[in-house]
Length: 622
Image 1: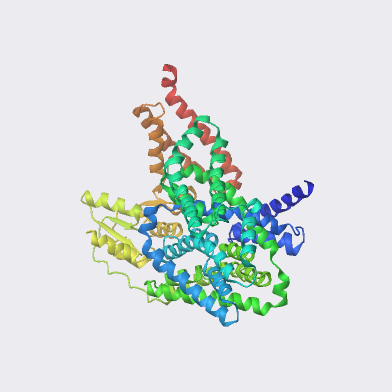
Image 2 (image 1 turned 90 degrees about the horizontal axis):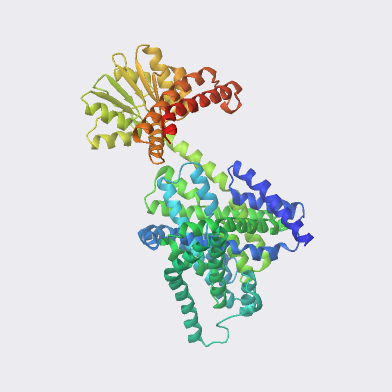
């Protein structure tokens, strides 16, 4: 017991320290877990031979992950994405598998080992890539969406891969079917070697297997709702968690008893339950267990990496890693061309998926357990996977550099010649500027619209609104738009710094000009205030204020009282911003500016007093 507690403390402490550091540095949680395992394993030797046994237990996190993936994939959504999933994703997996397997066979490996290596290296890192794309704001780009489609296909492909590996083991000289069956059962917690199909003839075994799959589908469709209602009657939160675990563990056990992959069964159950009203409840209950078990799995993988293999043949391991990245990159680049990706989107798609992935660890471990891969080869494979994942941040840096080069290499588009003038200049025609422009034009006033995004200007023109392409912060463009005679300038640019520069320049040129500026947040308000804007509108302020009024109307206040409270808050906030601007210092963060904090607290107490006095008549009546 003491040994178990000590080991648990070491694993948890390593995760708590390493993972936040890795996330803060932008490397992602998976690399943090791997680094933690490397430190407590090969580096410091704090964990010993029990790592492999613990890894078998931690692999259940993969089963839970695939259940959650199934919950996210409604059958209709899968059908709508079929072209990219089967086309882009399917081709990437098939071509990469074929090339890797061909290279492995050329190197003298058996065909079943080569196929296993092809499956392992065809996968990319879902965790690292999606997190990095999200952090960089690239997930909605053409390259980001294409990368997501491939990752989704790879996640789904893990299911048949796990099911295929035991069949490859049956064909191998090492291991044998009996070894594969025993190891597979141990890995998934199947005690005692029990099986429902071991002594049955082939036709009966097939019927039992199909019956088990049918039972999962029918149970998911017809039995889950009554069971959840029964659990709900108990009104005990932990019963929901117990039921969620029962579903996953029970299905995994059933799949093991009939000789199928537990991951296949839980994935299928997840897809069946994707349309259920209990889907989000299941996700929230399973997610913490999945995260911890997967984290533990990655730590054990890191702790089990044999760096003596790397030091013994550094040129081989590093060469294989570089070769894998180049090979996958070439396949992805070709597919990007075939699917009409261009420029920076092409490089994003290519470089973001050129590494191996975390499911490669799962397949490698499972390949060893089923006897497909020898342990010496598996150690080399694990090193190649880990090193390629560690190279992913460098691949994204390379993408950034190429994207910058691509942007600089394009010939600049000349700004439009402005042949109109009006009393109102609107700089920036995004979602904010569009509303302003429509309102002003609809009342009969002319506007001169400027924006540096050609696609936005072209889209405006298609809907009948005239605009001019060019950088609104350029002085010559502003003067061509009629800055000298304009009455109002609306600074509605997306870039806060560019917007501040525009306001400052316009104020210097026209001290009498009325400037209305869009602000991203309160700090930007202070910058615009100092730059000389007359009216400053925060992006979310008015919408949030209206939502707050709706809340008040639905918790007991009349429409009149809620409207008065909204007006009071609005007037107070405008005055508060002016007061806080006096103590705001651009060189000191607001959280460290004591004068700012003290004044903000005073103003907040003043707001509470005003609203209390406003609502006193209602409270007296109550």
